Image (cartoon, rainbow, N blue to C red):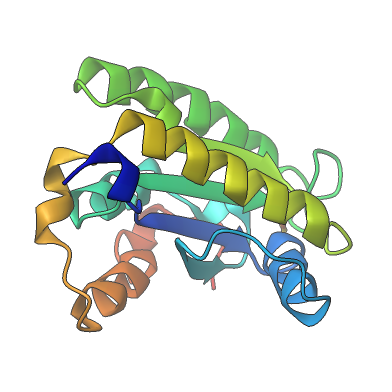
Length: 165
Ligand code: FES
């Protein structure tokens, strides 16, 4: 596949209380953004175990966005600070695994920030386009099964979660 024709598959784990609503707002307000993101709604960015991200990549995603409420505005007090700590550890892990850390991005977007979320999506898509496909992406199938598997990610490792859906 030539780099110019490459359309990355991006998985977005979006917090229900802010970024998911920002995505809704973007849709309602007809704010355009790259259509490459498959959204998985989670109750909080702190709900996103790093294994969710690794599994999304292993299932064929070329990049992953984690989006949550701004620091200080998490509906579960400080779980987005946990997301931030995990994010930095995850970037180190990805680097150690030979995966470009820039494929994964943590974004803060309130429910009112549809425009900002759209711009963040466009930015991630553009950056992942430059990186090219991740080797695992040949496993992606646009038949609904992959999306189902991605949605099932949050049902795994439930015992490790402190914020429940
Ligand atoms: S509730 Fe949105 S990041 Fe925690």
